[in-house]
Image (tube, rainbow, N blue to C red; front, side, top):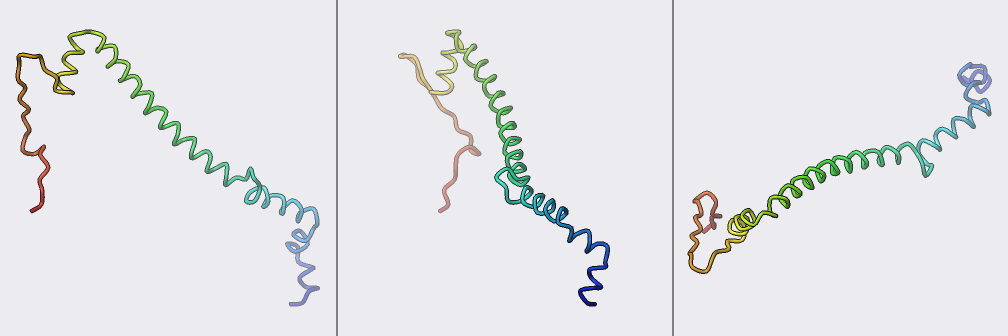
Length: 109
């Protein structure tokens, strides 16, 4: 097959058209190499989806924290929280901490 035979092919004439070449180069440039390429947009969209998932999680956490804060405004609840979380006690009482066997970390001898 020589060059004349290749020039007579329909697909070669279409691809060798200067307008088709310019459009093809433009599309490839915009798709891969441009600063606003499709690949960059795809990465940014994936990051946006990830951040929106984080936003939902943190909104739930904020709701739980607000509920906890509103409960702690009551002095009885505040005292209960301090006793349970920080092992605080009154002056005339003793506290015993019970640890279950499965909650104690075992050392390898």
